[in-house]
Length: 385
Ligand code: SAM
Image (tube, rainbow, N blue to C red; front, side, top):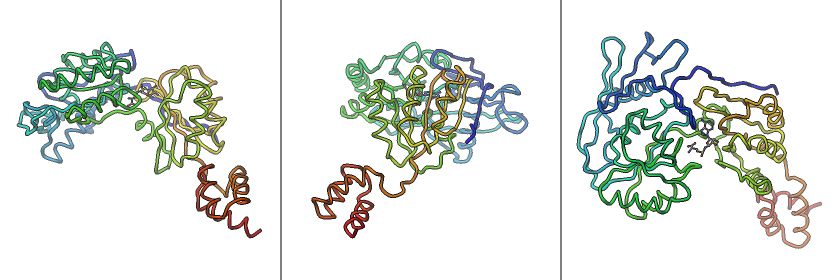
């Protein structure tokens, strides 16, 4: 099957990779609590002819939703003792949309820890609600304070920062609990995307909940979901693996462990390991499977290709640029099984020689992972031979 290039974007505005902050063009007006989306004559957001103003589009989409619903509570209720928010949208006379957020009251009595998703590349990919909550926060817990500061400076957010990473998560969680107990407004972000998804956060969340505080999500960007939505792989289920182990043996065992799952497999990978991971996937998984390589999503050199798994390594090798950046790998579900494979058949025959049909099928299923009813049907056939 020939290579199918699906997208290649070199025209996005507003980029923030790990270390590549870009200029913001949309007018999220910090302090003034107003988001302004500039619209072209078709009513779409626009920066320049070849650029897409993602932040303004965010504002416009949110505005349309607000207009439809009539009223929303973008940040209300998360931080106690603080005005909640009522947002109203209206469109100006010259195609300029305004989204004004006004104070209302909340009923909440205890602060919740807000888990806030942030962009995975394009700085415009942050929700109105995330901005509102980050602006209200007294303390923002983050992985890397310098990295967080770039995003927060872009939105003129001045909260104090507290580093939470895998080496200090327990102590940092204790500090966050103290802050919450003192009535402070606390949010948690990671370097990119959704905290707790292949990022620190889970232990903090568990500790904060155990201490009796609520934890509330502000959903947003996530690399796995971004890749899945453009992959076009038609499976009703996906299995998120995240990063495979770095060591060869453990990595191969992990791949064998997910091989039989009837779902699209989702992997995260870094550039220095992309070739060996793809080589192992191709060596251990069925050649009928397809792979989607989603690289640098939402960034300047975004690239999404779908190709047969056995061709993936050659594709990567053909151009050094294809091995750069951040990767999500999606592997299509295994091909449907036609009967039992040779190993299942061998195990079943051995067990049948010693055990009744039902027991042999049950044990064979536990040993091989094959479906019990399929093994039972085959065991009956073998008994009749
Ligand atoms: N918490 C993040 C999320 O919600 O997706 C994931 C953080 S994890 C430390 C970083 C990995 O996510 C990268 O190595 C890559 O596999 C994937 N990733 C993050 N941003 C990406 C992007 N813009 N394009 C492709 N993959 C990305």
